Length: 320
Image (tube, rainbow, N blue to C red; front, side):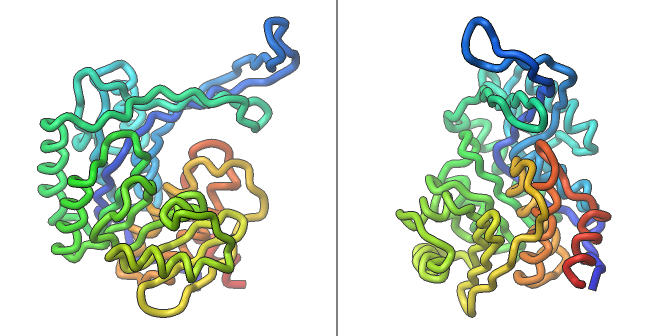
């Protein structure tokens, strides 16, 4: 079956660390006389929404209606970030401006389709009490009209344990699916429907590295410490493993022919998961769709999104 779920126009509340992704493209033809490093001659630059904003962008492109809730600084980067959101059709009403805070920006220099270096400008201090309360008030106001919630945690200071607890409890009481892209430092993410750790994040939860054959054991240990309904392990070239609280693990092979860049692939996964759950799909179908979408975006360079047409084509190819 090649039809996508009917998620057109469904509202997904996305909250988390927002990032401005800057891509500086160029070419290399010589080595610097000042140090043994390549000289990149810049040809063009791109500015894209990153972090939680990339989740919102994926949802928007796929036909959903994201409401983005994040924090930016009262700086030029924050103003530029709002312009980038507008160019992508994403409203900025949920952005909380925090005076004195630095807006997170990741600058990547790329030559011949390869990253040469990445420069990060960020602040990881917790939100001040006033900004945190504004975030919580906005979340509570938007939740009743949302069909799913995404927590996009990049550990840049937006979340603390108390805020995550409030979000989880409210989502579960409202019976709204909660999808979490996690960081180990913020375990246990109460109230989550499904949490999507990559291998390193899952190893952080488990307290040790593991191979794919140990996933059921690792999943059982993680689920015993949490109230999550399921864990979706994203294992790169080994695909994904959906581990529900009740039932057997579901292994989903990777669906990608060639990997160019994994930047933002996790954002695409949670975007598709949240839309599919919002549309009433069960977790196995939602996970399979997310896996197909991830296979699309890792075949692109830079922070990328998956279009409905690309997902339909991937779905049709997987059905053969």
